[in-house]
Image (tube, rainbow, N blue to C red; front, side, top):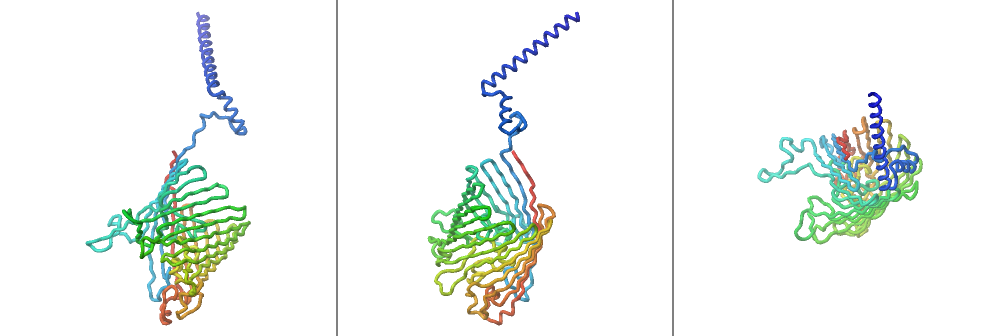
Length: 484
């Protein structure tokens, strides 16, 4: 009986084994017929192509996520003590003290051929809005109050990618070109700066990229005409071409050509176009960096007067692992009294804070120089050690033409000296603490340019040493990451 049972089990096992082997053979034949290769030979070929990489079945490789979403916060609070920031103070004027805060909530979505970015911004001085009154601040009369909302979209754009090199960015966006002298995000200012524009972008991701940006502003959805009546003076149209070309390992060429138009205050049908053309050549080798930028401005200014103005900026820089020294000069042309044209160079929509002193005595051109232009030699030192950075910056200021005070009590083109100190400490990658102290020694000519003095007796009313100090904290954490 036992022998019979044993033989029966052997027969059953053999039958199952033969059946399983036949099924595997049929499957293998079918796959070979369909794909031209067996799964084993496919893996072997893949291993050969991959330079003897580990043999892994294709089904075991997980596909990469095609989409990502990063959510981040950019919050900055700054305490300021002002007694001469942007203006020369009267001696008995009390200093100002306040705290401002800017908070941005950023959403950055990236897909294979599409990017979307939005930044919701709230910018205010502490106490400017009463939190008990809701979202807005109310001013005006009781019968006719006006409400402003400090929360708005700082940026909101979509960027389709046609391929690996071409894309177009549409919507509200920052325009940051070159060293930000002509186009900047103006990050120092509480609200910053952005533009409603369309930007065509090409980048070969090797040594060449170029962009063409277009903007056209209107104050409302007009039924007729294109009359532009903004609350503040702003361009009606803007066209910018930017090019950056790495000529070699040591030379880089940048060009910027722009056209911006301002509507006539007397004839809405007329828009005066201003043109700015030029660029920068950079040379870098080892620890040394040399550059020269030059721009020429022509066309018509916002009043319709013909333009002929220029800007030059040579600079030399030495940088080691911890120390950087920059020596340079900015030269902005001013009004020539014998010229029938407007000779005042306006640095468009760039930043002045990092170029012409942290006191920001010269930020709005040509009014801040009274049409006299400006010559600004500078010497900067920066030392970095671990988490600390110390900056020591020096400026000399001269009027280019002296037009502003040729009929004033003083006739000296030397305006004054400014000295800025900044100390940064980064305890973590997302926290930046900054303290700054800035002061200047100004001449009577500076007081005349900035305050429009008409007699010598008025000069003694103003302080010759304006100063300003601040303490800020900036926190930039990523609060959410999602891939799908």
